[in-house]
Length: 113
Image (cartoon, rainbow, N blue to C red):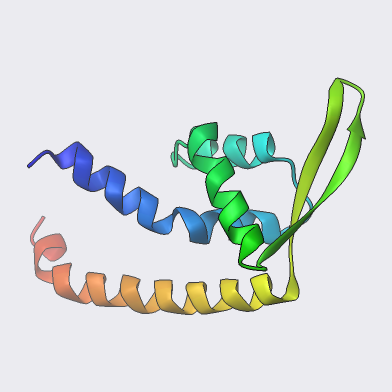
């Protein structure tokens, strides 16, 4: 088993939470989402982001608006819906519980270092 594969799966597991959280801060263009994720060391390729944005939009958690661009064709800017903000709160609560459980499960390992 490769460590890199497990780490990649862990990152994918929290990606949805991170993306919705970023979008909840205000209307944003996908390349800005990627930039923010990369600055947090959650490297994401466009091929990963766009299908996820479509799935979240189809689930009613995101909306987008088209905006004219001075650098080419119009761009989609995403924002969370009220349902998306409620969903985000549920994800954050679940993440905090999971984080606590993992910390409890690994406390003997981290305290011995």
